[in-house]
Amino acid sequence: MLLFCYFQSDLFKTFDDFMNRAAREFNFFDLFALFVKHSRTGIRLQPNGKRISAGTLQNYIYTEKLLKKFCTRKEIVLRLRPMRKLNSRELLTEKNYWKKFYKRFTAYLYDECGYFDNYAGQNMKIIKTFLGYVHKELVPGMGEYHKLFYVRTEKIAIHPLLPEELNYLIYDKEFEKALTPRLQLVKDVFVFGCTVALRVSDLLSLRRSNLRVSAGQYYLAVRSRKTTTDTLIRLPDYAIAILQKYKKQKVKLLPRFSSTNLNDYIKVLLEKAGLTQPVSKTRERRGIVTEIRKGGEQGKIYRFCDIASTHTMRRTAITTMLSLGMPEQIVRKISGHAPGSKEFYRYVLWAQTYQDQETEKMFAKLKEKKRVGT
Image (tube, rainbow, N blue to C red):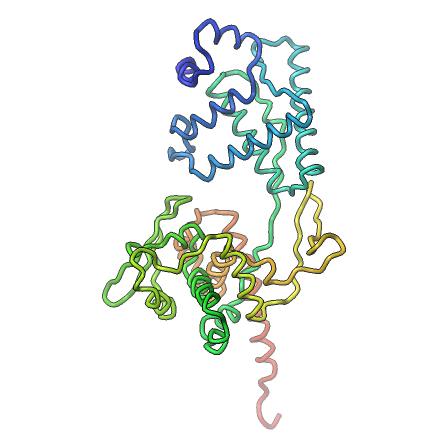
């Protein structure tokens, strides 16, 4: 299988060429190209047997470009040397080589590129995945250098709309009339997205074929592009009314927007809705929390409308369902999250905070209820 993979990739023309190269070292980017090819063609699969998604493949390409840019700037030639060909002194040298690579590459990501932990961690995770695949599949016994790398992650705040704020966008007709025709379209898409909990790629791709009508009830049936998970959600009256506005469209259910333009319009919409409260925006770099401000360190604090995006729709839908008492397993089925998902647990924690606040309000009102005449 190993030789077949190499000959198919055109990296090695003959068996002798393979043996000669294998006796010395391998070019890092030759093997990375083979890793990407195997991921794209289905030779390499996910642990559950599914094909590698297009989004993941695109991330591999971004990482490859980033590594090549790093090597060019630092005048570095990356290579891989099989452990089985090395003596004890050479093994120690190789270990130190990859330790040094990790330090220099992460310094480049943080100090020169200005990236935060999530993006730096994503790239290191891809490199670890690649090196693990080389060791297990491409050149067995190449070495487990990837175990030297640490993948940092950070928890970015969710910032969904509160149920009261979503209610205002749905039902306040005076606010809707005051909007421009373009922003009215944006509001319809945003409200619908805050209802159905779809990823923006699935939301903007909704077609007439995704709509189901049974016994007078409207349902949305969608298979997620990212996870291939099937979801089915019953639509409320206001969501049906939105769809009725655009029933003359032959293919799409909702007005057409690019995700970039929709991002910009959402910020304007929420600013006009008065959602301008200050929001602390923080990110982590090497595990250290940094406050991000508009225009740099001395700039203004972000407002809620400034940080809103297309992701806000899905986050709002999920937290609204949880906050208003829908069971977790039902919400998870609608959102397409896997059982035990860490991302979903963040929504649960946020919703619990909202529920606690509402409970405190209820107890405060209870405290005021005194018997007449006492």
